[in-house]
Length: 191
View 1: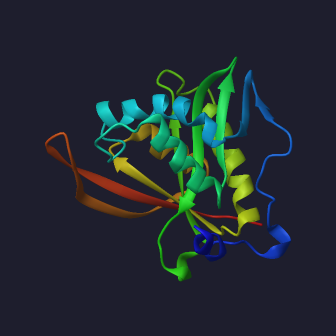
View 2 (view 1 turned 180 degrees about the horizontal axis):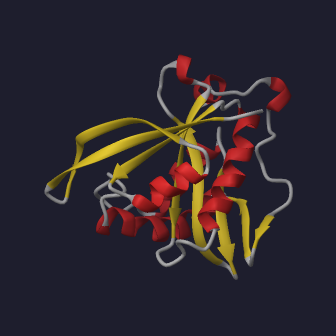
């Protein structure tokens, strides 16, 4: 992991700036930085996307330990944010490296997942606004969203946030006995 940190280190003037200093409030929901200790709650929210939908291309639910380890790996380089209301996890958003090659170092893939039933309440917008605001501080200049299609809600959120569709790959994922398309959306960031 030590080499990975150097691979994605932001310019020295931005180093360490991506952590939230003060929790952000949206309605009665609070957005805060995640920690690996949040792994069990995040796994509980995410695993139904694996088992009950084709939104995630993973096919086996993640254990609490596996999710905590995944989060620790992401948090070493990028922000991972949680939205909570009265101690209940409503959703999360994070960024991760988009591709391995060094030339892609200024791009990051952004991901967002909401608890079922929370859609349309502004939680996704608040999470993505907070995430996108922090990405330039870690050297990200292009945010990329990958969406399994069809997914009207995710497309609408990405486009609301200023992402533009740049690619469509038909039938590249196979889950639940059928082929699934994906699309890529891209947003240049200021910072």
